[in-house]
Image (cartoon, rainbow, N blue to C red; front, top):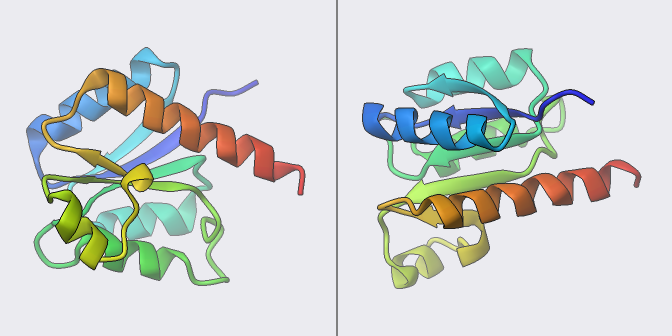
Length: 129
């Protein structure tokens, strides 16, 4: 079985390093991008098992990026996603984002691993449908 492939888009170099380290520690391969446009290009070219996007990036934010990727013609239109954000729960609620799809900054390795594992498990469960 091949290692899960995860797409990460975050404009913060420190978070890029942290997410790579956490993902590789649990056996994932990852493609790290620093902006939404590069992430979109990757999502058009490769099939990912999970996508993790910073909710607040310059230019296009994580929600806008996800909306572009969710178009039916894209091979990642059904790929599970997570957001990384420093927003509080009321802000996330106003944006219509559930707590289960967000990893709050500063990132806890334990929470990160749990959310990623849950998202990857849901992908495996849905693959047989």
